[in-house]
Image 1 (spheres, rainbow, N blue to C red):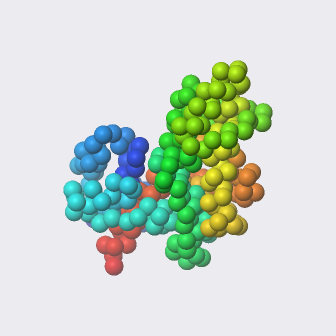
Image 2 (cartoon, rainbow, N blue to C red):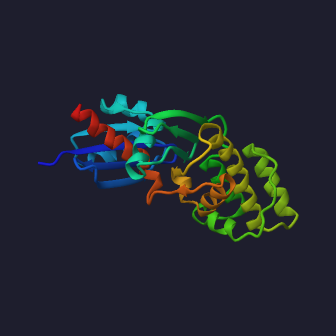
Image 3 (spheres, one colour):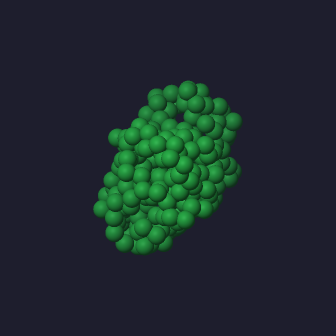
Length: 254
């Protein structure tokens, strides 16, 4: 009988579960909101899926390790493994999730060379974009599309979420276009993320993972700012869980 290996990525906003077979093919994938009790949500996902071994990643991985006696892996390594399975030649990764953003450089063999991480404030994260979308009256799913319709974008000087929200409110009161403000907010995030990427990997194609990778304005502005090709998986938010599942399979075979 074919073995099944699971990876679970417990993030600040969502939890992803991926199951792969011995051929490294994804046979099941599930997503749910993290909610106020991540372990209850994780248990609900895990209880409904059959697998031989599981590995956890994400900010909630240590809680999962205790609750389910499971192995864990850092998000950096999980994303590196997941990305290289999808894009075998990639040596640079941008991962933007709900609570942090990461720039990762890989050696030619796929091992992590170095990385830089922004986890001290919401600026440059999905949470920042979510708050700004709400302030402007957009739903997060449409935020990037609306920003792309702007002509140039307004300059947003504040990167602190609190000050940026106040700046956005002032711009709205002055009658500025919501789309132009949205474009400016995306550009401010891109400036911060691009700086991280250039410090760890200054050339070559880049894989873009995490939920924010679905945002078309972030994709376009990052590619333009870096003057490099940005590759986005079909389901960028599942890459961490996919990598964890592949590592669960590898640990079973070792």
